[in-house]
Length: 314
Length: 298
Image 1 (tube, helix red, strand yellow):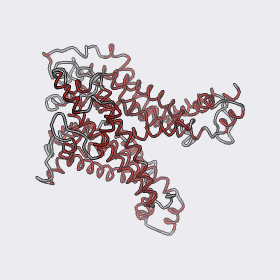
Image 2 (cartoon, chains in turn red, purple):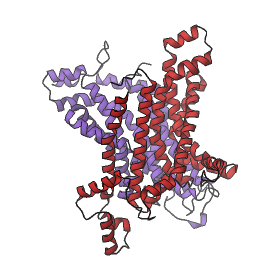
Image 3 (tube, helix red, strand yellow):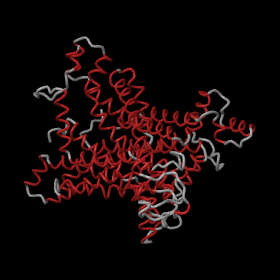
Image 4 (tube, one colour):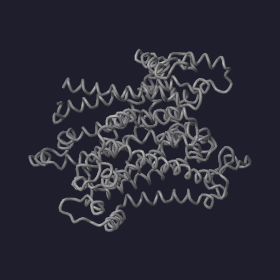
């Protein structure tokens, strides 16, 4: 088991290296001089030259990458050009609403997706099942930001029961924080709930057709025990993979959702950085989010292996 | 060699069908698929709007008319007007052109790149390690974030949206094609071709590729749907097409500030996105039911 975990962690290294290289060379994809591009048309040659010095742009590319990478390993990925604070600090200041929103979206996704999938599977081919399938197709086709806009209009403007936008920090009021993230977490979570529901349904259908389920029913186990105890725990592993993978959709969707609800999180940070050509911040967020996502997936793999004795660690 | 070329993969025990009867069978099965037909019908609406935009939408989608600013939907303007007095119906109809244009270009680019890299990775072990490490790294970046980061450096232009979305969505296709190729290269027909003296690249492109195409088609509907969604998201954020261009995301972005006075500015472009993406998703589900050998005959 330890060997498996170590190998899984070692496999992360090349991926992280390539992502780091990608984040670094991204800036060099800009047409012309990155420094001039970042500072805009009004910059003086002296300012441009100063920025070239700061960013080590006068050195050969491989040397630049090496320096940048060594510094990045120490957690130093430069300073925001726009806010004049170190990038990790800029991200740290914005991390709370983003993490809370991701967490709430996953809760929404699981609490709606899993029961919906189970109900669809246990009522196979009935109108409930058809309805569930139709709803999941619809769910996968709605842009989360448009769903968010509709939520704002309905719950915020029309019914006036939830705040329209913004975020109340946890330190001020945790109820306020949760209330302010309720609509965005549903806008994000409902979309991935469709994926989770689909996977739960097909996984449950497979398990329910197996012999041990028939045996359980034959010996008179109550139907709800068969479904929630016997079948669900055997069907849940593929669902967990989908939940793990859905982080990619959530982390990407965050950027747009935070903009819709004006939540001062990492997503809003990166989009403002893009609009202001604040490349160190774009690089930093890319690196941090990808690292987070990679380790979430490694964690999922390890959990998967721990829960399913059929998976060999060899 | 020509005899080998027409050897299809077949289920054990089944008679080898000719190419024509396979096609007839495909159409028959697909017509029976309710999901697929619904999807095709929804998509047909969007395609008709895109092709017939000048005849369907009689008003210029760019024409400003301050006199009819923020007019609600009515006889003159079916979907109302926006904050500059532009006809929302025309803008939504013309928006379908942009979404389908971007989506189909992304699908063509990802298919070309995905097939080539997938086959090279699946067939030529030397290249496999390099290609798959890069694919793993790109897959580790959430596609929307990857596209946004690329747009940040490339600048807001339609062609750059296509490039970014292609880079964001090609890794999934490469992975799918590669795994299909790994299975097919061990199939009997590949072995037969090899024993007849065919070279590796001939087997890969003439024998393995045609049999991997159905997987590419299914994955491409998913890519198309994702591309339309992400393209709308990018232009909503202001990092997609330049502002003013009638794209669904841009109309939504304009409408965001007028949600109270003019909800029609956000309702209609959103519905258009849902119809287009739902059509593509259902079409993909229908194709999967018909083309995927694992679900065939059910």
